Amino acid sequence: MQQQSTKSDPDNSASIPPFDEIEKVFLDAGATPDQLEDIEWLVDYAATEKLTTFAALAKAIGVSAATVSKVLRGKYAAAIGSFCATIENFRAQAKEQQDLGSVVYVPQLSVVRRITQFCDLTRITKQIGIIWGKNQSGKTKALKYYADNTPMTAYCKLPAGGATKPSMKRLALARGGISTRKSYEELREVILQRFNPLWLPIADEFHQTIKGTTRGHSFRSVTIDRFREVRDECGCGLVICGTDQLPEMMEDERFKDFLGQVGNRGVLRMRIPTAPTKKDIELLAGAYGFEGEPIGNTAAIVRQIANENGIGKLSGYFAVARRLANKAHTRLTWKHFDTTHSTLASWAEGKFEEAA
Image 1 (spheres, rainbow, N blue to C red):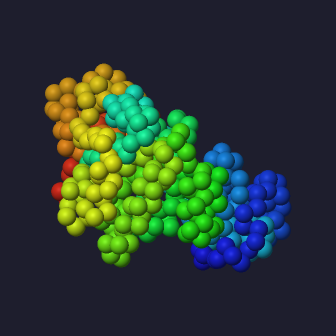
Image 2 (cartoon, one colour):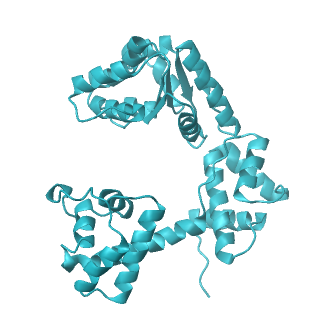
Image 3 (cartoon, rainbow, N blue to C red):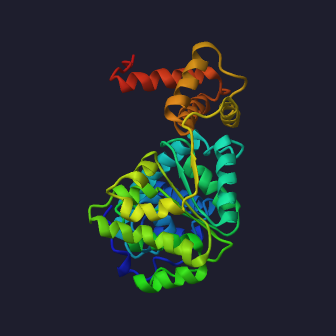
């Protein structure tokens, strides 16, 4: 469907009307029963997911807010067919997501406990805390869980490229109550006013800001200095998190001029191990619905994935296995995991089972 600028329609942020009103519009436009059924499903989906505006619904289904607004208000009748085709595609994907099941998160995991303790200590001591570890080790989800469940915590994921204002916008949105429609200097001033010693800002994906930029050494240093400034001027702690490259960058001569100042202040440091504990695996498997422990070769494969790729990758395998069980309307067992692993391993090698 052709996307249209949201600027052309001032009503794209208005509330979605009830289906009765929308149905009349579509009937007047000559919509078919199947198209009406698609629209009714979409309105129900919006209500279930608490998408109350045209803009929110548009973002979910991947079309412009102007298109959603105009079609549902009867101002774009020519697009009804293509719009309903978009709904059908989105509906099929939503069904697949439903079969996959809800995202499982286990707050009892060791990575959550370690990061909670570390963040609490960083807040109390007003230090800069540095966390690093490989991808899929559970850092980001643990930091988000901490921020969601601990008042006066501002978690933000920094953009690649090192651009200062987008980074400050993300910090402002994480803090809340700060309009981002300001000049860079105004935004900087308000951020410094709104943080105090009780707050803990968390800057995740810190390595991306450093290595991702192509704009030069001095430009990167501004972003780093802004976060350091928040900590120094507001008297609060600061947690920065990244991959294993982060501590290496702290010591790299190319970055030492600006990262050294942060590193010198970062008394608190913690590396998150890739491999989860045995208890972590048991907790995660139980949360997905597996009964009992894996044995033999299955146990060895589970441990290998966990040790080499982290708990995030293992969770992905468990999610696919649960989907297989759900689609077959059977209880989840470790056989579903075996099937998942063998199938994905075959695909990775370019081997595919021919249909009968």
